[in-house]
Image 1 (cartoon, rainbow, N blue to C red):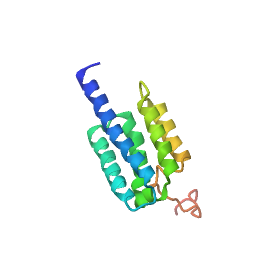
Image 2 (image 1 turned 90 degrees about the horizontal axis):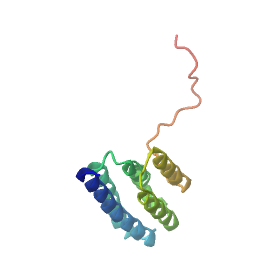
Image 3 (image 1 turned 180 degrees about the horizontal axis):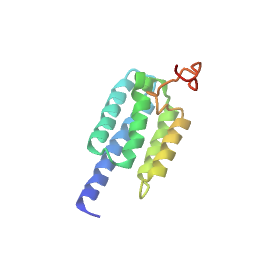
Image 4 (image 1 turned 45 degrees about the horizontal axis):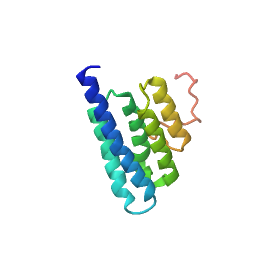
Length: 136
């Protein structure tokens, strides 16, 4: 392992610890006004991870979660048990020796199963349109 890989792992672990602390605090005060402070810090830390480690596989999971939380301030809609489940998921993911594409996909699907909308910016198609009809 070279120095660059070691620094990457340490940075990822340190940022993850910060994310987990904010999730635990958010879980403990879910539904209270103070939760906004932890949510703000959490979203900023997640963006920081994207900026510092854009190609780290774990970042993809964090950003899917970021989108679920940030879109229309949906962090307000999630409850303490969902946040606790996220902590467990992120902890298990970061404890893996290597994080591959399959691990990332599984983690994002788990977030969806926990009720987090990881694709809130998706386009909704009008199903009444006839897409097979040829233009004249």
